[in-house]
Image (cartoon, rainbow, N blue to C red; front, side, top):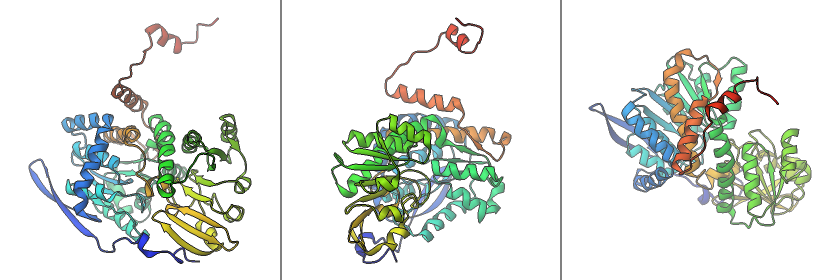
Length: 450
């Protein structure tokens, strides 16, 4: 059954004709014409105000940007970036640009681009190929436009850009010195590539460093997922049975934020240690087939595919809400849902009503895509400050060290992670203690005992 059945076309209609926005940037006395493709260049003024607001919330990246202006660590390297085009990403792009990089930017999800931000960046000389509401064809066209610039370093959120290089654009490999990955899903893909010896250049797993996943994933995903659900539905969370599929860092953060809103949280897991942890954190833990009978709201945050399937939809009660905060729209198995459906109705921008053959109605948010970005604005700027500071400093580290690296997945150097944590504390006006020489010696020796 087509997912377009009985949809109101006006609610998901996006322009089929886009305007190319041109801008001029000046570097080393040279004027270079840049071309971008965005939905509406006239949104640039609005986008600049949004970027200005994000800039105020990102003190660590601000400081790095100022240092990059003086250091110019990137010379004239080309950076190919496929990350959600939001105001926070704009600050990262401008920071890389301040360091001398030529930045070519596309989104990493068809529904996550903030069109006013894309227009603002295009107006300021960053080449942007992104708009909200892309088809799959549009999406890969944009990725290929970024790759047409022959990047020397790739930045990914989900590893689609890197995968495209390794499959259909292999001719570009010779010029790429390394890459960086932003999210759990992408790191999973990259580690699989490295295991199969398919990875052809070194990649830094930015997602896996503490100042990223312990804050961005936990606090960012937790808050922004709730924000997306509420903007889409305006439902009261207090008293609801909220089923969270996955208890990794994202799931853990979401579970705690949902509990704070008064929801009764049920966690579904496949890993015994995480399930035990969820139980000891005070959440109900059960199989998804059992949770399907009682849940009011279901949220997937696993990074895997087909988590909620036909057998679960069949047991859900009338009015259940389905949302996903994993990177790809495959965690909720939409073909199964459609096979059980007699009609689909668009209720509003981010809510689709699936009228099942058994008479019940289920509500899918944001087409099963990232609800926190498709229906809201994504993570708060202050938490993305650390994530993107990692990207900026890792890019500088990569430029300095790539000749000594193999085509493997690398962790963020510990000194970078700790520097970012200290800068963040400093920006918050927080001072902490330091170890004495005696304490440092004790922690690195074995001779002292009882």
